[in-house]
Length: 337
Image (cartoon, rainbow, N blue to C red; front, side, top):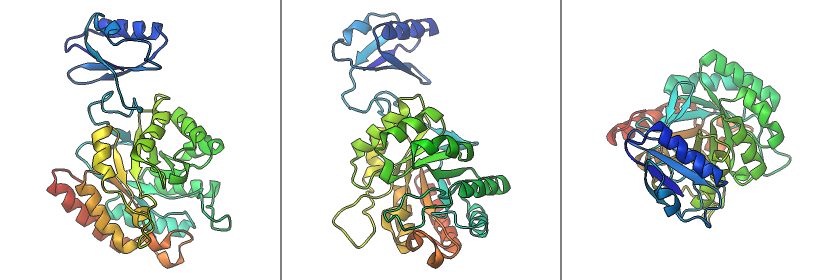
C-alpha cells in the first residue's frame, strides 16, 4: 500500500501519518520527492482498507500496490534511484563502466589490467576473489589474498572495486575490502546471503539467475531492500535457453522492462551474456541503446591463459575500442559516459 501525501504536507503531518501506520503493526518506508512525499506501507495489508488512511491530515490518496515486490516498485518510488559509490553516480543521465578480470590471478595480471581499464575510461574495477564454479576442480579464486590485491589496486589507481561474495559467512570479510558487493547469478535466491548483504548497507549488484524471471529478480532485490539498504543495482547477464551458439541468451528485453517496473539502476553484463569476446561489444552497444545504466565487462591481458572465462574476456585494446563505441551510443540517446 502507498500513501501519497499532499504537495504541501508538513513534516509534522508526515510524521503523524507514519506513527499512525506503525501503531497498526506496519513498517513505513518514506520516499521524499521534490514535489511530494510517498509513504510505503510494508506488511500484510489485506485486513486494512486504504480508506482508513485517507482521512489522516496531509494525505492526498491511498492505493494498494498489486505487485508482489514493493520497495523495488515504481509505485513506491516513482523517480529513478541513483546509487552513489565513492563520488560515482550510477543512474540518471550517466552510463558507467565496471571492468577487470573475471578472477584475480596474480598481482602482475591485476595491475596490468587495472591500468589499462582506467586509461580506457572505466569507473569501477571488477575482479573475483571468491569464484563459485560449476566444477569443484576449477579455479576457485585466491580468497583473502585476492581481496588484498584488489585493495592494493584500488589504492594505487583510485578506482572503487566490485567483487563477489558467495557465502553469508564471508560477507563481513568481503565488505571490509569491497566498495560494491556482487551477488552472482547462482546465488540470486540464496536468501540468507541476501539478508546478510542487506544488513551491511553497502552497495550491492544483484545478478539475475540463470533461469530466473524478471519478477523473481525483483523479489530477490526486495530481500536486500527490506533491510533499509537502498543502494541496490540489478544486473541482466543472460539466461539459459535452448540456444547453444552463445553461452547464455542475453535478454535485451529485460532492460526496458526493468526500467519500467523498478526505480533501481540496471547494469548489463554482455561478457556472461554471450560467453564469447567477439559478441561483447555489439551487445554492450545494444544494452546502452536499450537504456542500461552501466556495463560490467571482463578484461584480461592474455585471455588464452586466463584461469576462468578467458573466452569471454576482452583484451585491453578491444576494451578501449568498445568504450569509444559505447560512448557514441550514449551520446546519441542523450546520456554520457
